[in-house]
Image (cartoon, rainbow, N blue to C red):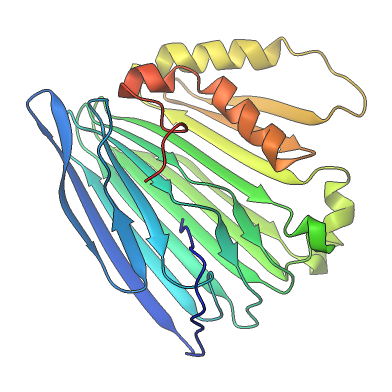
Length: 282
């Protein structure tokens, strides 16, 4: 996950490996960013908030991910700490014949909480992008993860026009693997726009950990009670992964509608963090 800020700079390098690391710890009744390290052009912003959780935002100089970019972010949340990881804006992926990639590896210690809440990923026409997210939870640790893939620059006629998108999501509870799945969108398997039909956003929400058992049950019940409507503007489904996690899939006709639905499903989160992660920007 990467947010990009407007800039006149460009990149012509064949490969730009970029690494970053964040460590969150609990100090007294609050969580703090113990260390934050990133190599250019990736930046880490750590603003204050009114809650007990510590927040960090990823950002980058330059206009977006360009051909050959390789990003890797490692996040560790200490025992009893709570952390929010978000982006300062959309992750924009430009035309990339050789491809570019982003990796997030998270480790949450006993009793910790990690909320991964990036802005949508927008792959432009001709983009080739691989995203990998892997999180390991310790005993009693919890995870809230959101991932939204947008159709592209639809206002410019670029609707599901990227060359390839691959997304891997892996969740482990200590040494046990709870979830391992891959999404591959490639025109070689059929025109992507036709396969998505009227939908312009694909969203994943993952909740895991004992502390979120009540929230998972409530969401599963809500989605299970939704009536089936023909030509609905949004379709949602919930899959319980044993007693440890819940995976929600959503397809929406607009990114805005998808984001509204995500915030509605996660309406418990501001109280859990002590502040609203969607109301503030650094």
